[in-house]
Amino acid sequence: MSQATLHDTPPPGGRGPLDRVFDLTGRRTTVARELRGGVTTFFAMAYIILLNPIILGGAKDVTGAQLSIPQLTTMTALSATIATIIMGLVGNAPMAVASGLGINAVVAFQAAPVMTWAQAMGLVVIEGIVIVLLAVTGIRERIMHAIPLALKHAIAVGIGAFIALVGLYDAKFISSSATSPPLALGTGGKLMGWPAVVFAIALVLMIVLYVRRVPGAILIGIVAATVVAVIVQANAKVPAEGWGVVVPDVPEKFFATPDFGLLFNVDVFGGFGRAGFITALVVLFTLVLSGFFDAMGTILGLSDEAGLVNEKGEVPNLGRILTMDGLSAALGGLTSSSANTVFVESAAGIGEGARTGLANIATGALFAVTLFLTPLAAVVPAQAAAPALVLVGALMMTQVAKVTWDDLDIAIPAFLTIVFMPFTYSITNGIGAGVVAYTLIKLARGKIRETHWLIWVIALIFLAYFGLHPIEEVLGVK
Image (cartoon, rainbow, N blue to C red; front, side, top):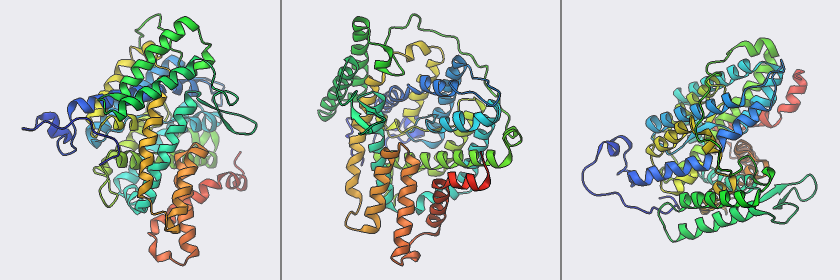
């Protein structure tokens, strides 16, 4: 079982339709727990509806064109709705899907400057198709099975550290600096202002409720902190930069008409002609690698935390989950919302007990509602939702005990996997560092035959990934 405490016990008796579809009894969960987990996941990742349009809408393509923020908001919510529900129905996993941070930056700042937006989204469609092909042929699943079990646990631990950092940083409880040290508490090493107070209240409340095994602890913390934040903002008028992306103001209106103008605005192969074959290929390689391994690490980490991984490190319905992940990425291109991927914030819902795809139905339904209630989605600040990531990060960290630290063949790669994720703000970098270190140690100790041949292939791919800049210079890519 996961380290996350289950607050309910499945009812005895016959199996209803939802139980049969999602195997609630088999996974020792209940409808109430799944719905609660799905709602919690939505609140933990609802920021993407606002943040993704800001990232994509703030960039210009090669013609100087910018995408419409209202249209991007609609497409982000629509894409997340469809992808999350399909993942729940087909993959039966509590893993919500939406536009991936990091991947959208590649689209905005690497693809768009050398091609049109439609062509950049075309590359996203191709990325999704490539990932689907890797999934349906079984290659992606074999790669995941080839990774040593101890490294899989390290990936889960690294993701725990990563999402805790994401939560602390997004809530401005820690900040970055151009001078030493690179990260500091609050602003200039000091906690200042009401947003920090709201974050602290939310985190303390969640921890107290969770350790006392109160059902809905995380969700209660998010809602309560949001109410506090709204009251604070109404009276203290904290500047927008103090909160971050979302300012907890009561919106002037609660309804908004969705704008579907960007739907299917895509040119699948035009980018190769506009930017040049090599340049477009480098962008595509970056998209595929980031999408492939970010999702792989997240899926492994979330499955481990949800107690879905068996003693061999295998995940149920893995082939379906991986295929749906690829299709979701392609859907992101078709909606111009950038590639969709499994969201690590799903750990918040898992922390509330979500174990099946039914939680995704709740999350997806709330994303659908935000198509018309976008102003209301802008009320929950990071300071209210991010503490959930810190708490769940702590729960995921407990899996560090599963790593055999007295075996240097595993200990060093596991350590690098764990620290590279938060230190470089990238799940992909963490997996790459661990795999490369693992293969180098095996090579140095003459244990080549003990290592699955696919691990060597992955290591070579990651070496190319880490050396992408000098490779681009050799190839003359601008």
